[in-house]
Amino acid sequence: MFFEPININGLHISNRFVRSATHEWLAEDDGTPTPAIGDMYEELAKYEVGLIISGYSYVNPAGKSSKRQQGIYDDRFIGPYRQITERVHKYGGKISLQVVHGGRQALVTPEYPQTMAPSAVKDSSSGKMPQAMTEEQILGTIEDFAQAVRRAQEAGFDAAQLHVAHGFLLSSFISPYTNRRTDEWGGSVENRTRIILEIIRRARELVGDDFPIMVKMNATDGFGNKGLDAPECVEIAVALERAGVCAIEVSGGIMEAGEVMSRRAVNSPEMEAYFRDYARMIKQAVDIPVMLVGGMRSRAVMEEMLEGGYADMVSVSRPFIREPDLVVKFREGVHEAECTSCNGCFDESGVRCNLGR
Image 1: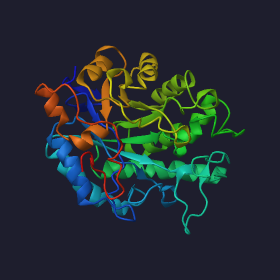
Image 2: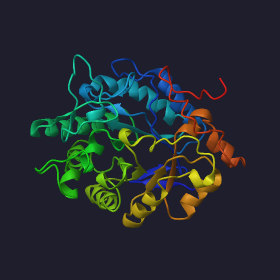
Image 3: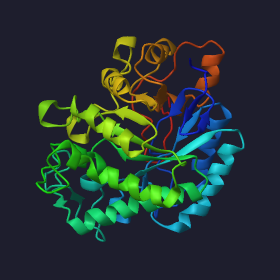
């Protein structure tokens, strides 16, 4: 199934490989994407990665969560992004822009001294205490995301992906650990998911029904019964599909749970695809394509995920940093990526494989 095509809301993708979103630390300080980011995406397209998902792009300056992170909060970014999408399309590649707000994990700066979240729940990994969002801030954030999706379409992206994972703002809304509101934006699963459904509704007003809107979602926060986990994640996935989401990428973990989302030393097939069970539960409940991310390195495990009903597409991040030509190598008979899951690639001077340097 590796090299079989798939369609996402009419978007034809040539194979089942996804480059999962990876922060590159390569944007300008104001979020403007640089040619160096285009170099990376063009290379992935050249080497036949079916769908490339960009590094996370913040929808409001107050939602920036890392140095040299890409932005999409102003129309002036449309031109630079269009130059990047044209480079990808030159090789027949498909690319989605991932959009995000940092929420309680945003940077604290003199201009933006206060982080915000659905509820005032201290982030134990950073010590930050966010401010509970007002109704006005929630409605403004819905518009920020919808306009970001519109900019993605105008910049030539083939899709947009809402980042609803890893403890960022939308992830913190769907989690009962970080969302303790008692109004229409909290409490029940329906209320905790409401902000995402409203983003999709408003975005559809701007981009129409044909433009694919995908979601990367946490299936688990990563620390047991006080956070998001099954079966609630399945209920959320069903609601997202009903609202018009075209594909779901299944991930997990927030900063406070430790190395749940990018586990180190994945050195055996048994350790790979560590969110597989969540992905299969979700895949059994929805009819849209499901992507699975999390520590996949070997061809055999990836094939098992596709053929065993866990996922429709396999999302890979760290191995593509070391081997952007990994898809071609798999086609030629290579059985395993060289990546050792050391996380040395998360380099603030620019993402790169530092193994052996």
